[in-house]
Length: 365
Figure 1 (cartoon, helix red, strand yellow):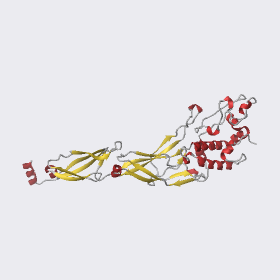
Figure 2 (tube, one colour):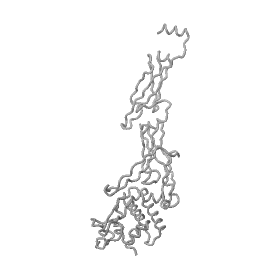
Figure 3 (cartoon, one colour):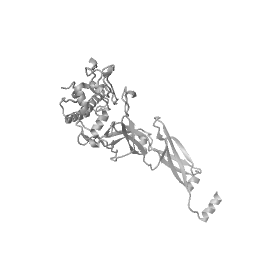
Figure 4 (tube, one colour):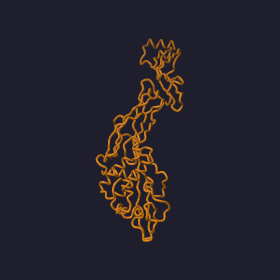
């Protein structure tokens, strides 16, 4: 006869459950209540912590024996109560050692503080609570969760089907209300995958929504690892610059500590007419020496498809430039404003001259 059944009830099993039944029950409960499957649900997060802590205790024969014999109070004390413990330890909700308030198993912070209590009958260390997601990750990595869980730490596939990319870790936030004095251990990190997103100047000028397919691995309700190919709508704001990051949180593989984040890094494809410099667009106009000396005319196509007529009657200096305000790239932080169109002039000199040409130039110049 067990002292209390709260932990068994949280997993939906009987106190006589075997080790395999405990594992199967935890797998089912953890996948049902995992925060990644229940975004922004405080109730699901609490249920996930409860079932994970219940599994941690009941899957350990020694801890389970103490719990069955003395209940949660006994587990927190590290064993049987002292002879003079009194009625303060009689119920599952009481705090041992004269601590104020009641103990709620599901109310423990999801950070795994260390609780130690000693009794007047001699020293002893109590149960140490761990982070619920750490328990789940260890369960998955150990192979106890069933086929497929061994690949839980595989990397996120690329937007175009490739893999890899720069990775860095982001620390998981500490649980709300958690105190460092409780002995919290550093939380696991979740990797961030970075993938290039090449764009044309026209796409960066007009703005566009790119639909990108990603490959990821997560767990279904039965605890089995499954692959999926979700399509992400990636918004490109007009005027976005190369090197900009477009961030998606929690869209990658399900790993220890949560799901991977994905950052798209904007890259600029080479353009046949323009070179971007900040918010300006630079266009080179190539002139023959005769044109540079005697005058010329051109029709320049702008980035938005307009025709800009340019005409010069006098000499054009090599390396000189003209600026046309408001014909460059949109300024993303200043809607309605644009950079400049810059025309830079290069002059093509002849590689050789005849004697007569030289003589004529001497007379003219």
